[in-house]
Amino acid sequence: IESLTEWVELSEPFAYGYLGLRPWEFEKMTMGEYLSVSDAYSKKMQSDDRRMAYFTAWMLTPYSEDLNKTYQTIYYGLHPDDKPLPEEEKEQFCEMFNV
Image 1 (cartoon, rainbow, N blue to C red):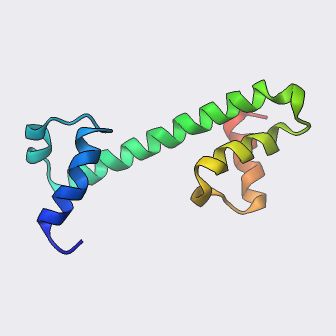
Image 2 (cartoon, helix red, strand yellow; image 1 turned 90 degrees about the vertical axis):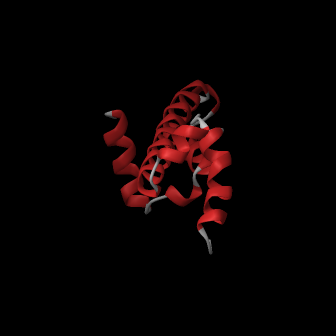
Image 3 (cartoon, rainbow, N blue to C red; image 1 turned 120 degrees about the horizontal axis):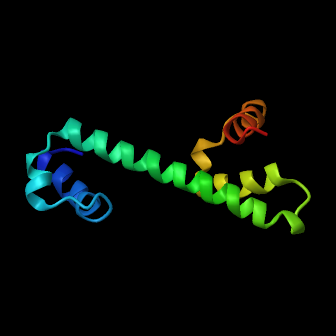
């Protein structure tokens, strides 16, 4: 991004659409505040996707042999950049769902 105008043009659709901000709310925000709000939104969406992947994996249990593998396939299909190393992956799953 080369200018503030370009940044505003790229940020407005996300701010008005996904974040639900009004134009006067977006105009009053600093860049730092906007980035904090958009980061919090992204984390919320990841949390929602984790929950949905977990419950979807449980619904597919009769058709699948491994709940953990089904969960990973669903979640990491949505968020491939989040895929940790294999050892960390199992620990995170067990810790998150107390398995």
